Length: 451
Image (cartoon, rainbow, N blue to C red):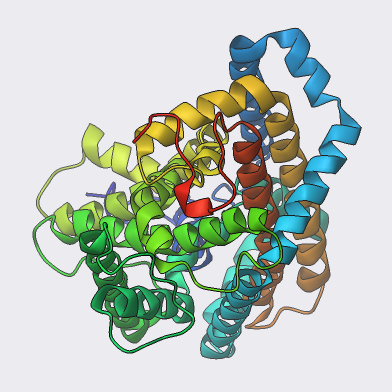
């Protein structure tokens, strides 16, 4: 049974019923920080830099995949083509500039949510207890460096988890609801036809986002700082909640991809909200979210399964596997995402077909793979260094109830623009490798599969 009750630890810091010391309190803290803010947290009593090895190994595996696809000589040439990298960064920055509306909305909504979370937890004593636990066996330098290393594994965490930001999720659901029902004449919604070809997807998109918003509100009422709980005695929510989560994330990612893609039309490309194209990309955006942030959905399902079955099944390999999934598994799964996150760039130029996105990713690996490795590696370094600086400044303050939460929030202020830049760069690489691109109308871009 101890394999289930991973956060129910004795106050003495020792396992219930035994005299052996346990790291359960750190494990509990890691679970709360991951599900609360998408932050990887130390789970061992001594500093652990294995995340650095995960990032380096993942980038190396991606380079091997690129080398196999395009040849190692060409891959090395692209990897060290620094003028080419600067041109790619400039092109990605131009896309973000031309898509300033979605950038402003995304950053504004996330700042609002982070500030609200700070207000809700500002005076809770658990905040200072958590900070003392982290600093019990770590100095300031060790703790900040460790957090910076963890940030290198998930530099795009904020972009693919926007379904948790309620203002943004509500706004996206309302826009798609209006487009699907034709309720009112909204001059900011572009309807490409009187009968949208994907109206059933539109209903599915706004409906699933609305349900996930209800779920998030229920969690806030139950306890904003606690891990999500199972709501029933059968494994129903352990399947439904991750599905709703990935659909809410996918709807916002589809919106961002459309805006970044339409930036190719010039400064006037984003005057209207292309709701039909957002709905069209919705299925492949869900697919892209799963490939970019797999630990988010797998860990949620594993946690809810543990909650459901903890009193009915004895400890065994299944419970151990689920426990590993919500602890060490998060980091290793996110490392593997370096090999698959590039699918997002190809997905922007399809008509919603995941198979076409995979074919497009193959073209990116063959034509621009070296630059893909370079941009992901550079983004990891920037996210790690920036997050480390944020933690070093905030955690150097006297221990207070709000310090650790504030440090997590300021680290997100670093990774949010990094994630948006990654997404813009991937969309740029996807456009460069299009076999037949028709930029006169972004919604008519043909995908490689011809579907």
